[in-house]
Image 1: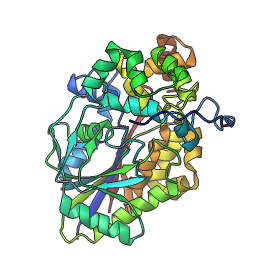
Image 2: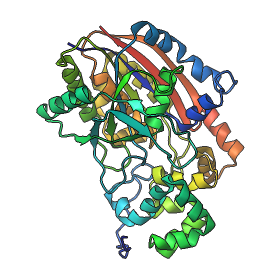
Image 3: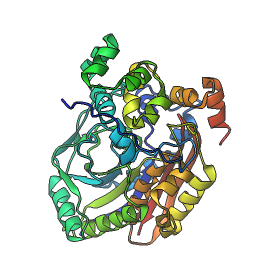
Image 4: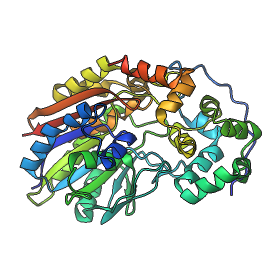
Length: 279
Length: 123
């Protein structure tokens, strides 16, 4: 049976993509941020996972308000990238894994997660940037991917507790997949930031630090928040921490920290990365 | 093509979180076409068309006058108040090369340097 070896959670700030493309990893502004990924890259290099299940939020590329699923699972052989409207590069498609996608979909529905199923999906920076951070030397990486989109655009957003339960259900689905493949679950977004409104620029270091700690050893604590409470504490887009919580939900074993890093600011955002092993 | 329905006079509740616009159904009802127009900016060709004749492009999406003014003024707070969603509005402001820090400075009334200093001060 397939095995989830860990969860990687990371900010997906658009400007990261340009920094990578322009080779700015050693610039003073970017160095502390990129250095924060090095121990995670070493872990990935050792572990060589076969599949990445990527929980991310679409930013108005694949989904519009006419037809917006709360949870959507990709079941495509490949995932294209497309022009998002402000000049980020378009890349060759990421590799899918439709057989396992359909298994996950069937298992989720069986577990009463009535998700949308997508045989075509275009990926935006929320998927691409973490993939480029975690697999910096391959574009696209050879790892097979299953994207899972969570709505953060249109309220009502799913409850954080529900996102955590979705992660658990994904963990169950992987556990019943009959190969010995190694799976890593990735949650993207966050940490605290707010782009819009008079409160733009809001960052909450204390709350982010609490989240990092809770994700390691007390994730249930974060399920007590409502989505609106997350907005209040972490900023309008800081609510993206629900993807981290969903990724954490997929870990059913003994969880230990591989590495974490936190840096303020990148763009308007408190940037964070957290890598958890699942034994 | 959708035609704009007159915007209902809906009592706007006070902000639950000060300085924060929650894009719920109430907001979504106000500006479907504005957000739809901004979504069209995923296409380079549409960005070019808009930039050549912004008002005409707005008209083709049946935007009401006050939304057109907010768009041509690139007034982010006004667009938010009128029902714009930041994920889509960012595609509009991106046409003019505005970064999220430029948006932050504009919305907080700070200069770009002041806004950056405010961000850094939270480290």
